Every structure is written in structure tokens, then in C-alpha cells.
Amino acid sequence: MRRQRLKDHQQEQHLFRVRIIIATVVAALLLGLLGVRLTYLQVVNHSHFATLSQNNRVRIEALPPPRGLIFDRHGVVIAENRPSHQLELIPEQVRDLEDTLARLGELIRLEPQDLERIQRGLRTSRRFNNVAVKSNLSDEEIALFALNRHLFPGVDLYARPARHYPYGASLAHVLGYMGRINENELQRIDRRNYAGTMHIGKTGVERFYEDKLHGQVGLRRVEANVQGRVLRTLEEQPPISGQDITLTIDVTLQLAAEQALGQSAGAVVALDPRNGEVLAMVSTPSFDPGLFFHGIPQHTYSELMSHPRRPLFNRVLAGQYPPGSTLKPVLALGGLEHELIVPSRSMYTPGYYQLPNYSRRFRDWTYHGWVNMDEAIARSSDVYFYDLGHRMGIDRMSEFFGLFGIGEATGIDLLGERRGVLPSRAWKRQAMGESWFPAETIIAAIGQGYMLTTPLQLASITATLAMRGQRVTPHLLKSHETDMDLPSSERGRNGLQPVTVRRDSLWDPIIEAMVNTMHQPYGTAFRTGRDALYQMAGKTGTAQVFGLAEDEEYDEELVPEKLRDHALFVGFAPADDPRIAVAVIVENGGSGGRVAAPIARQVVDAYLLGDGS
Image 1 (cartoon, rainbow, N blue to C red):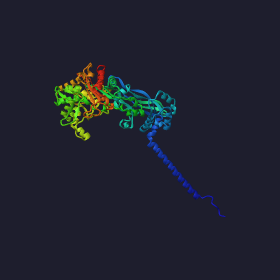
Image 2 (cartoon, rainbow, N blue to C red):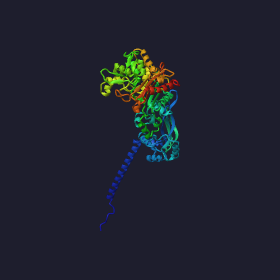
Image 3 (cartoon, rainbow, N blue to C red):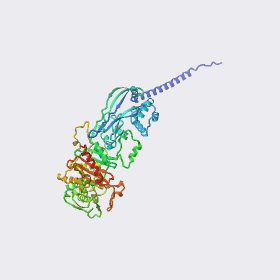
Image 4 (cartoon, helix red, strand yellow):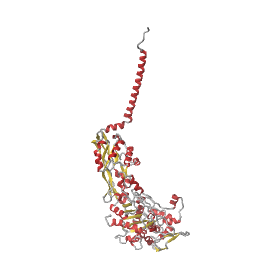
């Protein structure tokens, strides 16, 4: 019988070698994976995990600077900071964000805009930076969260300064408002200096002087536990507060102007003609600027945007209206400069004007009879100025109006100013590709047609008339902490070329005619100016909203309100020593003498007979 072998040593050795090779490969693969993971953790993501590790013990927090206050010219606070509690979370300390927000929503009502803001904050902020959850918490919400704080790791209450406007809507179009920083604004700001800051000036003074008002961010190194609770402060570099600024606005005059306008849609601008300081700037209707700081509800914003009277629209800067007869004193001065009229020479106005070889009659519903230059301004005779405009021509007329700043921005320290329109042959050819017609010159002579101005431009033009050609730049900044000694008169000039005429005496009959508009029985604003305790120079105006046929007569009672004429008035006082220049427009108000002039009178009374200075 053949003996059987119990072991196959050769096969065992082969199996052993195979197993060794497999084990070696597996071990090598595992070591390789471990090496890749260690490289990823320690090299690629080193800074992230180093921060996480350090944040278990020490973290750096940004200290947002207190925003500068805003005062009126008499030191009255018109924009300030008040403490407001808000809920914030640190993303890296929140394990399950969706669950956390869902449970928070059961305690505190989260609006859709709150959830949108959280998502935007998560996209634009680093995971160790705070993200706002809900602002302006009520006392009840604060107490409710405080009782349940232990259930929400990574979420906490913070006291943040909130912008407050004591005068609300009355100064909204001057101060503007603040809102949360959006993604577009993140591209233009220094993110390091806005660390910890969630709001920025959006419009008005808040936007224009953002750099002065914001300040410099501070830093604080704190020791915290694993839940993120601060145990102690290790080091602190305090923030530098934003600069306080003082505006030229007189808040008492602002309120008086707003009250004078009442419920009408319109604008009032009051300047100091000597230096360009804006004393009052009212656009009605207005809005509450405080609504925007904590995030305005969508339905409220939609109501403001769709409101037919456009409360968000700043009529002073962006409203463009035909100036109407308010420009007749400027055109009369141009006629004197070009020696086309003599103040004492009269012409007969039959109630219409007709160009040579032109069938259309241009109507004048104001006055029929003989008028000289003084009466033409005071009575607001259209025929007199139709004739002057025709003889002057659109080119000389446009050039002379341009000297007063029509068709160009005034340069006020606010954003969003419109330029208006100064029509000319070149302008029409460029804008419309059409030739200029003689009839358009006639219409331009009474401030109608293509010509458009803003209320601020009208106030600036009036200030130039008051100062006999000296032009100033309207401005709102009176002083700030690093500019306390700069004379306001120097700030307002900015190198503007004065309006010069052949003789200084040419200004006298123009200003006298504006005084007679207010104080002579034949003046269109006599009822407004007759009992004034000072002498005021003024000019009424009416701007058509729609055109009339040649023989059609305007009847205000039969015209829908939205198609009624705009009422305008410009003036300055005292006439012999001007301290205030005013422009008023009342949309669809009708007669400038009946509606706009009394508003201007109330404003001037409040300034000259009150505490104005």
C-alpha cells in the first residue's frame, strides 16, 4: 500500500506568500488613504480646522463701531442710535440648521424675509461669523428665548445699536435710511471694516456720508467654552466711533414747510442764498425711514412702491417739472443783456401772439392791455415774453438760461439728482433727431414745452437772482468732527462762475418787478405779500400737465385732478438783504399765486419771524 503525504509544503508556502502580498497591498492602500486624509486635513484644510480647534478655547470677535449721530443746524438730534436685541447664530456651532430654525420658529415667529436674510448671510459670511436670525425682538420674545437658550447651541441674543429717526417721515428724503448690506454692496465696501456690521446707508445723507458716519471696526480676543459661551476677554482693541455730522437743515423750518404743504403732493426747498445752505427740503408724501432698518415686510414695501402718489420718490432732487412763468425774470434779464427790451417801453398784449406767416395763435389768459417789463413780470403776461423769446431766439435763450444752471445738476451732496432739460437746437437734434421749430421757441419762452427743472434747481436759480449773479452750490453738510472750522460760505461756492451782465444796474428792475409781484395790487401774488412785515421778491408760475387746443380754454373744475396744472412759486426775502430763497411746487395744484405762494409765505415767515438765523 502506497504511503500518503500529510502535508504539501510547497503549496503551503505558495498560499502563505499570496496572503502576505494581499495583506501588504491592503496595508499599503490603507496607509495611503490615511496619508491622503492626513494631508487633506493638515495641509489643505489646515486653517479651517486650526480655527475650529482654537475656537474651542479662543476666538476673535469684531466690534462694530457706533455710528455717528446727525444733528440739525441748531444741535437738535435728527438721527441717533438706540439699543435693539436681535437673535444671531454662528453656523459652525449649529449642528442641524434646518432643525434649529424649525424649533426656533415655534418659539419666535420667523417671517419669509427673515429666512431669506439667513440664507443670504450663510452665503456671504464665513462659518465662524455671526448671522442675523431676527431683529428688533420684543420683550416677550427675549424672555421666551432666554428660558430656552440651552436648547439652541450656537444661537444667542445680542444687543445691537439700531438707527432711530426722531422726526420720522418729516426728514426721510433728507436723511434717507439704512438697510441690511446686500451682495452688491459687499463688492464695493471694505469687508474687514464692516465685520460685525450688518447695515449700511442706502439713500440720502446716510448714503452720501457713509464713510464719515461708519467709523473703524474694533477687535476682541475672547476665551469661550465648547458651546461658544464667552468666559472672559483676553484682549480688546476698541472700535473708533463714526463721526457726528451737523447739517444745514433747520428742523423747525422743515416741520413748518411740511405743515404748509399739508396733504398735497409737492416739494419745498429753502436755501440761504449767501452760501447755499439747505435750510429745508421737503418732498411729500413721505415715508417712515425706520421701517427699512430691521427689514421692511414685503407687503409694506409693495404698498409703498405701488402707491399712486409715490412716497419713496424724492421730488426735490428727481422731480422734473416745466418751470412755467417762474423763469420770466431770468428771460427778462436776458432781454436787457442783449438790449432787446427797455424796461419803460410798453407793448400792447391783445390776449394772443402770432408769429409772422404762421396761422396759429398762442393764447394768453392772464392779462390784456398795455404792459412794460415790470408789469409783464408782475402780471405774468405771456404775450410780452412770447415776443421777447421770438426776438431773442432759442440759441441765445438757451445759452442765457444755461448760465443759471438749467440743464445741469446743482452738485448737492446727495445721490440721485436729475439734471432737468435745457432745450436747444443741438439738444433736440441729438435727443430726437429732429429740427427745431419757431413755435417751440415761443413755448420755451414761458417755461413750457421741452424745458424741465427740479425744485432744487429752481431754488438755486432764485438764490442766484437774489445775490445778483453770485452762484452757490446747495449743500447739506454744515460741519463734522474733522471739519469744524471750514466757513460755510467757502463750502458752498466750489468755483461756480457768477452770472455777469453788462451793467450791475440791470439786476435792479428785475428784482423790483419781483417785489411788485408781491406788494403791488397788479401783482399775481399780491394777496400773499400785502400784509408781510418784510419786503419779499417773488414770481408765480403755472405749468401745464397737458396741452390745449388753440381756442380751448382751461377750466380747472372740469379737469380731472391728475391733469390739472402744477402750481409753482419762487421767491426770496428780505428783498434788500436776502437771507432765504424758496421754491415751491404743488403737483396738480392749479394757480401758483393762489396755492404755491401762500405756502412759501408760511415758510419765510417761520424763518424770518421765528428763530431763523
